[in-house]
Structure formats: C-alpha cells, structure tokens
Amino acid sequence: MQLILRRSLYAVILLAGLVWVFVSADKTNSATAGRIPAPQKGFLAPEFKLETSDGHLVALTDYRGKAVLVNLWATWCPPCRAEMPTIEKEYQAYQNQGLIVLGVNSTIEDDPTAIAPFVKQNNITFPILLDINGEASNLYELRSLPTSFFIGRDGVIKDVVVGGPMSEALLRTDIEEIIK
Amino acid sequence: MNIFSLFQNIFAPPRDLILIILAAWIGLTLSERRAPRRHVNLDSLSNLLLVGLVSFVVGGRVLYALENLAIFAQSPASIFSLNTALFDQWGGLVVAAIMAFVYGRRIHLPLWLSLDALTPLFATLAIGIAFSHLASGAAFGKETNVPWAIEQWGALRHPTQIYEIVASILTLTLILIQRTTARPGFEFILFVALTSASRLVIEGLRGDSTLIFGGFRAAQIAAWLILLVALIGLDYQQRLDHKKE
Image (cartoon, rainbow over all chains, first blue to last red; front, side, top):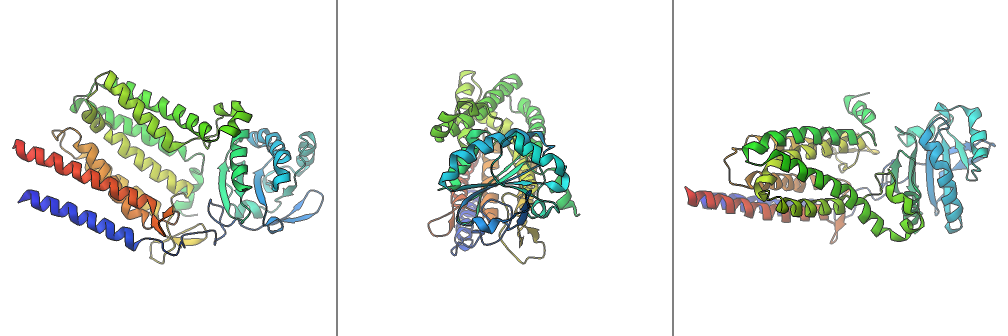
C-alpha cells in the first residue's frame, strides 16, 4: 500500500512538473529580448550623450549598427590604468572591422586635470568621454571600476566585465562576439 | 536605500564571490561534521575535495582556452590571467567530477557514503550561489504585477533570486534533519531531487531563460529529466529498505 502511495506521489510530482513546463513556456519569446534599456547582458544598452575633452558631443546612438565597447574608468584606478594599453591595442586591431571603443571617464569621481596627460602618455586614440555629472555611471549602475560593456550591432549588451585588468584573450573573445 | 540595494552595493560583482567562498567554508564545516557519522575518513575526504577543486580550476580554464584556441594562440600568457570570465564553469565541473571519481576509486572511498558526507557542502554552496545571484542581479525574474515584485533591470520582476535562496535553505534544512542511518546515497539523491524540483519551478518565473523548441525553457527540461532519475533512485532505495524490514 505504502509503495503504491509513494509511486502515485512521485507520478503526481512529475506530471505537475510537466504541466508547469508547458504552462510557463515563453511562446512569444518576450522575456527580455533587448526591449528594455538596462545595464545587463541581454538588454538594450542605455543611451547617453557625453562631451569629449575637446568639447565634442558623442551619443551612443551615433554608433547604432556598430560593435561598441564602453569602458568606464578613472585615472586613480590601477586596474583601469593597467588595461588601457591592451584596449588600445585591440582597438587598433579591430577598428577596421567596425569596432568602436568609448572610454567613459567617471569624471565625477576623478581629477579632470589628470585625464589628458594619462591619455597622451598611453597614446590612446579612441574617444574619451567625460562623465562630469555621473549620468552614464548612474545609467550603467556603476559599482566597481573598471567596468566594460560589450554592445552588439543591434544595440544589445552581449557581455559585462566588472573589474580588471582585462587580458588580451578576454577582450578578443568578447570583441569577436560583438563584431559578428 | 532599502536593504536589498544595500546588499547589492556591498556585494556587487566581483565581491559577490565572497558569498560563494563563505558558503563553501560553512558547507565544508557541515560536511566535516557529517563525515564520521557516514563512516567516511576525514583526511581522505579533504584530499578528494582538493583534487576536485584543483581539477575544477585547471579544467575550466584549459577547456575555455581550447574552445577559443585561435585567440589564446595569439596571447598564450592569457591562460594564466586572473580574469574569472575566461572560464568554462560547466566544463570545469565535469572535469572535477571525473577526477574526483577516479581519485576516490584509487583511495577506496565509498562512493555513495562520500556523496552523502559532501551533500551539506553542495547544499550550502547552492545557498551561496543564490545570494550571489541576488547581489549581481543575475538569474533575474520575468516581469510581473505580483505585490512582492521587485524593481530590477528597468521593470517590476519576480524576485527569483529570493525564491532561490528560500528553496536552497529549505533543501539544506531537509538534508540536515535526515537520519544518518539512511541507506548510502539517500541524502545525495534527496538533495538532487529537491534541487531539480525547485529549479523546475523557479526557472518558469525567470526572465533570462535559454529557450528551445519554440519557447520551452532548456533548464526546466533538464531539471525535469534529473528529477525523474532522482525519484527513480529514491523509489529504488525505499524499496530496498522495505524489503530489509
């Protein structure tokens, strides 16, 4: 009797599980699918518009259709400083394939006078944007420096790397993914 | 700032790894207490865990490098990089399981009793992983209007990370209250059954599932199959107990 009861219970559990698999199926593929802007893998990259150190306004929307690496950094942050030359090297290697790198300096928590010398010293050629009011840092819910967002040609974030310095292999793996 | 935001700020990635390390430490302590009661030699079990851990780290990194061979060929030194993203977690787990199995056989550790002794560690790690999901915002829920929904990634969502924490704590509690006279392997199979059942339920409320066959959630199907095998295992064990009585 106990055996029958137990097996019946197990059968009910499995049947209920199977029903739940069908009921909770996402037939419309509506889970996230990049419709909502949020700083998370699988979501649309939040839009921002920032000035470069020479006064040009740059918006993320300007680069829709291109693969974009958004790197949030500061001059006082050792891993940020350490990974900059590697990012520049990969930018040189992949820019012909449509890679854009936007170095967003978290100016709200940085010394603005230290930015230009650092950029010059490291021969950085990609645009450095100044997040003076913390607009981009807030939109991207910045909690650790550096943080990098790899954005595909469709504007959807494909990977988020928190912390650094990023190695060449990590950069290339993610860049290869977004330039597809 | 609510307690949820405060927790997320304190344990934002990569600091969320602290939660997993803390869980591993507590789990190891629980497993060490459990081992003598399951007649498993503590030193042998510690050596087994060390072999598993080293195999996980090395295996996960080597497999990742092999999967991205062209990239690593250009910068071979990256294989020693401290970037945790350069890692195949599932591959590392498979390598660790194989190496631990082979080593366990070599030192004559009883398989099912060892798995029982290690079950509190597995169950506590599951709690740590659930907390790390809450901290990082990973494994998030789908949009909902339920009163207990949380604001996350631009929408009100099911707090699936909290469901995961509650389910994993309940699983650990049920494991810890089991009689230690149970048949070898019972605690481990029970853990597998409970964990797969909770994943089956919670996955249906998630917003980041991998979808297959026109909308079915891959992890749910895998969880259902694992649950099926675990229930067959439990039934087999209980039948043996019944015959013995």
